Structure formats: structure tokens, C-alpha cells
Amino acid sequence: ARELEKIRREREEEARRKQVEDEELAARLAATGNPLLRGANGSAAAGGLRRRWDADVVFAHQSRSEPKKAKRFINDTIR
Image (cartoon, rainbow, N blue to C red; front, side, top):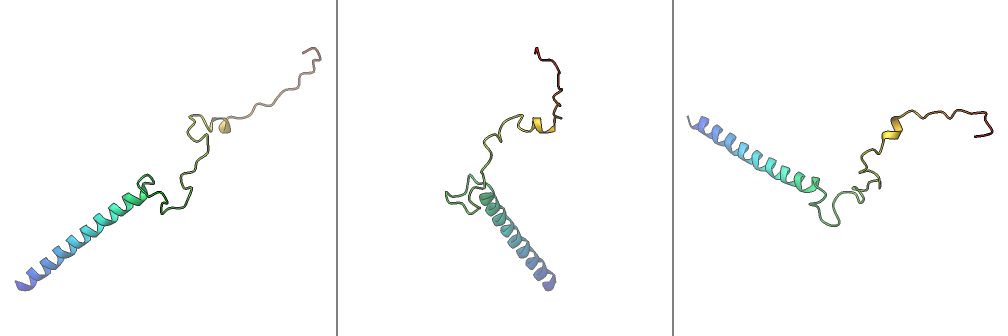
């Protein structure tokens, strides 16, 4: 009975310790994962948030997928 209680206590302590470590890891990841919560110098690479000036445009890549129309030669000197 003593051995069983001892094993149960050890498992409970290990589970509590693991839970605390997981919570600390989650808090660290949440703090470093969000660039707005990082300090001014930031631990991530500088310029990690750099984007193109047109990155927020709704139809930025629309013309890439459309086939380009070939210009037809019109042999008409009046136009």
C-alpha cells in the first residue's frame, strides 16, 4: 500500500511539473510569436514584417493568372 501511494504521489508531482512547464512554454511562445508583443529590438530577424507596398491590395495577383491577349496586326493605314 505504501509503494502504491508513493508511486501515485510521484506521478501526480510529475504531471503537475509537466503542466507547469507546458504553461510556461505556451506563454513564451505566445510572447515571442506575436511581433507586436516583442520589444523594439525584437528577438526575431530584423525586417521580418517587411512586405511589398501592394501586399494589401485585394486584386494584387489577378493579372498573373489571366492569359495575355496577343495583339493582332491590322493592316489598315487609315486607323
